[in-house]
Amino acid sequence: MAIMRTYEYQVSDRNGKVVKGRIDAQNEAAVANRLRSMGVAPIAINEVVTGGLQTEIKIPGLSDKVSTKDLAIMSRQMATMISAGLSLLRTLTILADQTESKPLQKVLALTRNDVEQGGALSESLGRHTHVFPPLMVNMIRAGEVGGFLEEALISVAENYEKEVKLRAQIKSAMTYPVMVFCMAILAVVGMLLFIVPVFQQMFTDLGGELPLPTQILVIMSGVMKWLAPVLAVAAIVFGIWWNRHKNDHAVRSRWQPLTLRIPIFGNLFKKVAIARFTRNFGTMLGAGVPILQALEIVGETSGNYVIELAVKDVQENVRTGKSLAAPLANHAVFPPMVVQMVSTGEDSGALETMLKKISEFYDEEVEATTEQLTSLIEPLMIAVLGVIIGGMIISLYMPIFSVMDLVS
Image (cartoon, helix red, strand yellow):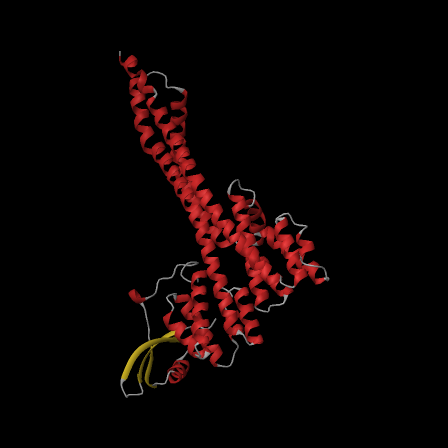
């Protein structure tokens, strides 16, 4: 990817007024061309040299990330401006100047330069695979070829808006149990490291034999003194490793199938994957993407390795001339209802409509499941936390009941 530099400029507008500002571009010539396209006359263009405290701090793997929400907003704004009659170059210029995401801003500026030099929008977006997913690039390419770019962008925006909503529902279901689980771990570790040793010294001074639960707690406290630092370092190392390798084929093939078998949450993850697969598949077919090409992309975007393998098998069967529904029935991850609706859609010529109906059904199922899980997990986690902390407190105070006998 070409290096973007920041330039300060002075221009004269149509009224002869001098205006100053900053802009990101590859070189001074690109800055001058962009300013002229905005209807102003460049007077001075100077590169901004930053350093020291002005240097932008970047966190690897975080600072350069563009969220799905950013893509949804960008697609919606782009579709609105194009439908209003703005040129593609003007649209990209406005988006690059207005977006709040710095990484997206830089990529849009590069895309604008590519389009200005005669490149296609989809081709320019496809050069930045770390920002624009294949699903988005292929849908825009189909819109360009078919002459319905505005409709393709609206479909992309709607697809990503639903994806953002789906992720928000998952987070709402997972946040509470995860937070309670972390609080329980911190409470247990804190008691073992700081509270139990105080009681242990008191019991030692008093003498006598400790009850079995208290002895177990004292042993755990001694182990935790050296185990806690090891676990903390291991957690940090695992977090770094996971961030780098979670999308590797070998890793995904092992842990993603297990997510579908997790008690309570496995069914939720399955519904999420099916909703994502059918929504992306239906959106791509509606945008005019060929079915084989669409299958190749939506398998990866489903977010689960089991469905990805199943879609690859479906793709091979479709390539040999077989129907879409028949190979789907061979994979248990797809419920009979999904297979039947896909079959009906094929027979009636309304496959796109049926896929969207399936995705809407499972979106509603995910929402209902998250509400049920939240209602179920809240009292369950409170009870578990109460048993753990309460059990430790009882174990600590059991020797107190015999303190008077020991003193006498």
